[in-house]
Amino acid sequence: MKSEKTNVLIADDHPIFRRGLFEIIEESEGFHVIAEADDGETALCALRDVRPDIAVLDIAMPNMGGLDVLVKTGHWGEKPIFVLLTMYDDEIYLRKALEFGALGYLLKDNAESELIACQNDVLAGKHYISPGVSRTLAESSGTSADLLEKLTPTERKIFLLIADYKNNNEIAELLGISIRTVQNHRFNICQKLNLRGHNALIRLATQHC
Amino acid sequence: MKSEKTNVLIADDHPIFRRGLFEIIEESEGFHVIAEADDGETALCALRDVRPDIAVLDIAMPNMGGLDVLVKTGHWGEKPIFVLLTMYDDEIYLRKALEFGALGYLLKDNAESELIACQNDVLAGKHYISPGVSRTLAESSGTSADLLEKLTPTERKIFLLIADYKNNNEIAELLGISIRTVQNHRFNICQKLNLRGHNALIRLATQHC
DNA sequence: TTACATCTGAGTATTGCTACTCATTTGGCT
DNA sequence: AGCCAAATGAGTAGCAATACTCAGATGTAA
Image (tube, rainbow over all chains, first blue to last red; front, side, top):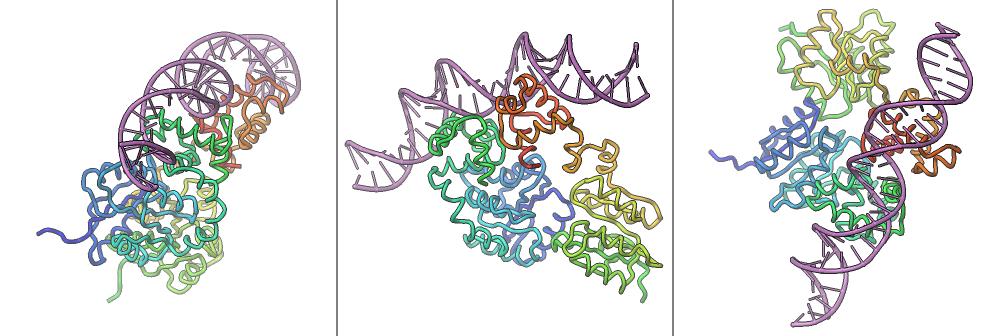
């Protein structure tokens, strides 16, 4: 018998928390946990292999974080719907998640019911963001967004990765492009933002985000 | 019919994680979740009321942390056996937990099987400490609290200047020493803190300060 | 005095970021 | 079709940080 349920991959490095996720999803109508992962790399492999409909990823995991997994699938032809899980309502994570195409963004301390509501929404193509977070974003959308508006989409992505202390090599690998291209984007960003020197860009990026 | 199972109270502010705890304990032989709490105060009240055999407490909870709950029961005549849960393997928490009479100390990212093993051990009066923690305790490797204590005075100064996004040239000029000396200090700092790569030091410094 | 930690500085090599210029391709707009 | 922004990538330089090893000066505690 074929399953008509929506297949979900869950990735979290805490087994007990993952168990909680599993139970909540399994007992819901219409969703089924098809794969589990305890770190980013395993999650990425599983995404390739089992092709779930939805990927529920913890942001803070060993080896590779949920955001990195999200970024790495950026150039895939067919991607799952992404729901990011985070411990803290840090707006920069939300910004990054949305920038890289995630539809769901959930706080880990939210109620169980949120998870299912979120999955239903993202499955319908809608964004779902935990109530506690959206407030933060709405308040701050005027300030830190200005700088990023000067940049093109790809430049924005790279800027955010720089803010994450990634080096050119890591950025290139994450985006699936050449390191030379990253260098060029970096140069262009510095031009646009009128920056010079080794620490100037990383300083602005980390302090800004 | 009276339950012959060991009664357990679980306290954690994350519903999904608590759900995971619940499932693992309930499916085990000999243990039964008799009460749940989502913060310290609720846990303390529940301890008074239902008198569980074992209390599994998260350290980081709103209102009152697990350690505070542990301390507050210190003068009780009859106390449950305490198992503390923590997210990070911070040795100071372990010290405190043991100091105040906890028998179990578990990392949240440990395997599900650990929880049951721990409960069996503490029920027999033995200590159970997550493997990952005891290692940390033995090595006494630095957490953010005593990170700077490993460094010499000059290294600390340089570390703070790095956190200020200063480059070697600027640091050398500010301190009135050679760039080479600054480079050496930087190298030694990286050695002590076990860092490698271009961004590792500036990352730690800026995030720490 | 010996021993040790700390501070200071240099030698040498490698890696990584910056600073440009130039070329190709792609997709959207007129 | 022609134009243009955006993305991608290479060539070439130069500069800064990292990754070591080695060594002299200083002060301090055993």
